[in-house]
Length: 147
Image (cartoon, rainbow, N blue to C red; front, side, top):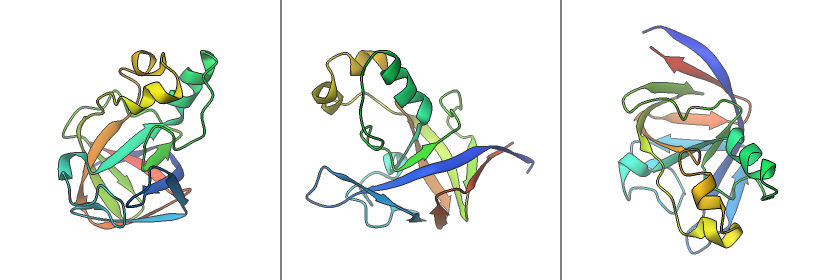
């Protein structure tokens, strides 16, 4: 399987049980149920890991909507924009191999940040992936697109 580097991991986050606050982490452990320790772990493996591009934050900022990184609910923030990828395509980060499962749907909580945000990020909020090879991901890891 051929691969090429597409970008890098900028930030990692976990949603802890009983909290809506995204906790930054320097490393995430992923297994077939998602991000170990995340409140969405083992709930829906098709939607267990959310990847967002810094492009989403840049797009919001271009419309004078400022928000902290992690506010979009992502587990993994990239400097690469993966939104054009289709279900079935694979990404390698650190020791983990991930497969695109679906585009991220809009969540009502984005309106709490700014009422324009859901419409603005309709196709630019993120993508969900499922874990097909368990492993750790660290900040700064290179993202490889597998072909």
